[in-house]
Length: 140
Length: 288
Image (cartoon, rainbow over all chains, first blue to last red; front, top):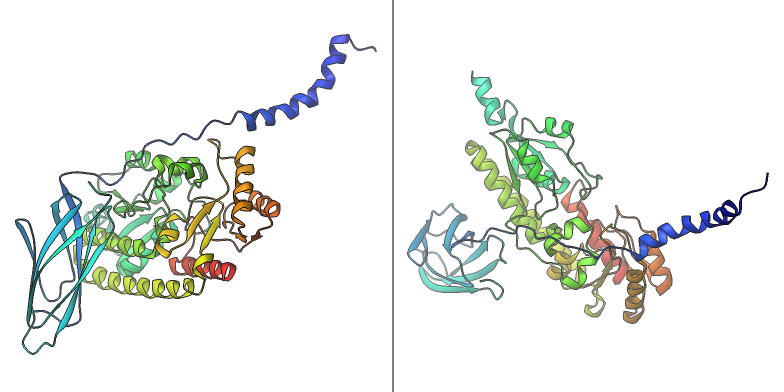
C-alpha cells in the first residue's frame, strides 16, 4: 500500500516533535516567582527571653526597661519580657550578692523574637548597677 | 469522667501527647519532654520534609496531640490547611518562627532548595546554626510548660541539659572548623540550604544548582554555574543527601572540582547531634 504524500511528510516529523517538546520545556521555563511569607509578627512591643548565667548565686536582681521592672529569684535563669519595639533597648541592671561573695560575673543574654541575640557580662563585688544598651542595625 | 477530661486535655496516662512534623524537632521535643511527653512522629527521619503532605491517616495519627510542632519559616506550606482540620484543644507551634530569619539574597533565590520553600526569600534551614537550635529548645520548653504546667521542673531541667549539650556541640564544631585555613572556608553546595551555617561559622557560600519555577535546572543556569566555579577555581562541591547528585556531578566534571561527601541539608535525621557531626566532619575533611 502506498502512503499519501501528506502521511509520508508527517511520519518523519514525529521524532522531531518528540525531541522538540522537552526542548521547548527548557527554553520556555518560567521565571522564578517568589511569594511573600509571613515573618515574625510586628507590633508595638518586642517579646524577648532574658537569660542569665551566674558564677555565684545572687541575693537580688532587677532589670528595668523604661517603666517596667522584672525581678529574678536566685533560682531563676530566664524570664519572658516585653518592651517597646525599636533598634535599641537600654536595660538598667541591679544586682546584690550575698556577703562574702568574691568579685563575680553575671552574663545577660537577650533573645528577642525574630532578632539576633545580644549578650553582656556584668562584673561586681557585693553589688552592681549598670546601664546596658543593645542595638541592632537592621531593625526598625 | 476523669479519663475523658485527661483525653480532652491531651494528657493521657502516659503523659502529654504531642506530634512533630520534622525529625529534628522530634529529637528536640523528646529531649525536653523526657518521659512526660509522648511524641507522634508524623515525618520520620529519611522522609523528604520539602515534599511531605499530610494524608488523612496522618491527621488521624495526630488526633490525640495537644501540640503539633512544626519547623516553621514556611517549610510546611500545608500548615494553613492542617489548622482547619484541628480540634479545639489542638494547636500548631512553629518552632522556628521566633528565630531570626536569614533571607536568601534576590540573586540567589533561584538556588533555593525548591521553588516553594524560598517564598519571600526566607531560608527555612535555620537549624544549621547551633545557637538557633538552642532557641528552639527554649520555645519547646515554654510550649510544653504551657500545656502541662505540672511538668515545669522536668521541662526546665531537661531543657537546660539539652542546651548544655548544644553548647558542647558548638564548641566542638568551632574547633573542627578552626582547622580549615581561613582562605579555604568556602562552602559550595547544590542549593542555598546552608546560609545559616555559613553565616554562623564564617564560610563564604556559593550555590550552583539553580531552579526554574518547575524545580528543574535550566541550561542557562547550568552554564552560569560552570562559569562561576571555573572563575573561582572551586576545589570541591558538596552534594545533599536526599537530592539527586547527577547535576552536581556533571557540574563538577566540567569544572575539574571534586565531589565531597553528601551533607544533610533538610534535617531529615534521627539526631540533631549526628547531623551536625556528620556535616562538619565532611566539610572539614573536604576543605582542610
